[in-house]
Length: 115
Length: 114
Image (cartoon, rainbow over all chains, first blue to last red; front, side, top):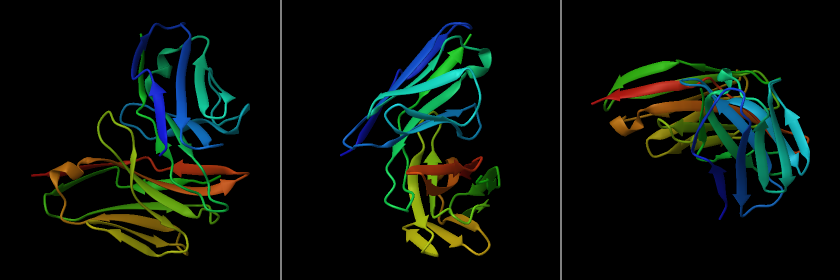
C-alpha cells in the first residue's frame, strides 16, 4: 500500500532563517507531487507541483522553492523566512489514470510558525 | 484556469438534520470531483468522489450529485452527527500534461450541534 511521510510535524523558526520541509512517498512510482499551504482558517493554496524528477512548476510567486531530487521525494525550501510564511504546509501525491484525474493523498502536514 | 466556488462558508445544523454544501466550477474539461473532510489540525481526507460520467453517488449517509451542464456539484450529508463537524473542501480536477490539476474550493466549516 502507498504511504506518504512528511516532516517535521511542527516547526518554529525565526524570521530570516532558512527552511527545509521534506516529503517522501512509498509504494508508488512516478507520482505527481504537490506542496500546498493553508493559512489559519483558510483554504488550500497550491504552491508547487511536480510530474517527474527535476520538474517543478510554481503556482504562486514567493520566496519559497521546491525540488524533486528523487522520484518519490519532494522538498520545500526557503533561504530566508518571512512572517507571512507561517501556516500549515501539506504535501500530497496522486497518479492520474489516463485522462481521468484522481484522488490526492495528503501527508500529515507541517505547522510552521515564523517568529 | 479552473475556478471553484464553494458555499456556504459556514454551516450550522442540529444533530439529525441534513447538510448540503454546493460548489460550482468553470472548466468543462474537469472530470473528477472529490470531497475532502479536514478535522482541526489534521490532513484533508477523501470522503466521497464522483467522475464526470456519473450523475450521483452515495455512500451510507453521504452523497454527491453532479450537474455537468450547469457545472455544479453538491455534497449531501443526512442524519448528521457531532463527529461530522469539520471543514469540508470540494475540488474540480482534470489531467493536463500528465498532471492531476486539482483546484479546491475555499471550504465550508460545518458545525453539528448535539
